Length: 337
Image 1: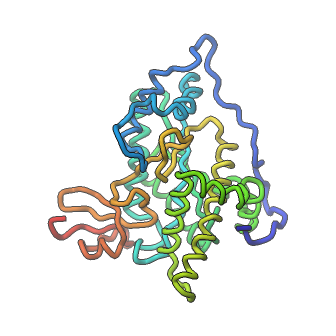
Image 2 (image 1 turned 30 degrees about the horizontal axis):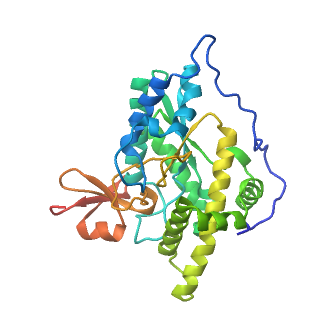
């Protein structure tokens, strides 16, 4: 689906789309790869892998793509860098979320990522960082969320990282690439330069099972998140299928741009990923649906201390609303949950 908008001249200096980035080099005399350390880092991530695969748990050797991604920085004695596209904006469906700003679900997810980096540091002393590649502006027109809400979400996300003292996390978004260029122009530019063709994507959806699952999952989210559609249910389904292709095109474009800016990173994903993928799916919090994220839900804290993501409408039936600094934060279960 072609993006909307025109491409006026930028109002500020724009970073190059394909910057020259020199990956860290191993010191003279160092081995080509510190495989044992790479194994230990990956073993730290494996308990939180997000996947649709079934079968026995496998060790780090089953993930050669991730071992290859980790090797250069480990060999160079540099901090490991993980890039994680996600944390775009809240769903526009008020039956799923508490509002358009980050809440307890995001706070706990960010803390989890920061703690994960600390655990990596225990096996790789140079440490680790997670670069959260916030992608709300990439497809805000397709998910029907105002750009002003995405700016507010991104600004609040940065403030949350700062206020919580999460020193292993940073945020990267289209503002870091295209400066103050209008948002429609940013989307036009990234789509034109990086997105796969619609024909290519349709063929992959028909022939590749992970792509088909991704397409179905995004179509479902778009259908659930559309709150003001005046046509029939079947017309909405057709509209969501069309927009789902556009979301995947832009998501692929965003991934390509991230790789151009951070070629030496290990790529994480909030979507389930099959074994053998170049992306490693990461589960942030417990949820009954493997596709559920903090920005499509809210958090319920059970009486036994368990924390679970679920739709707001479901959490309301099970608990009472908790405010933090005057804003809705999460629900506390009132029964035996």
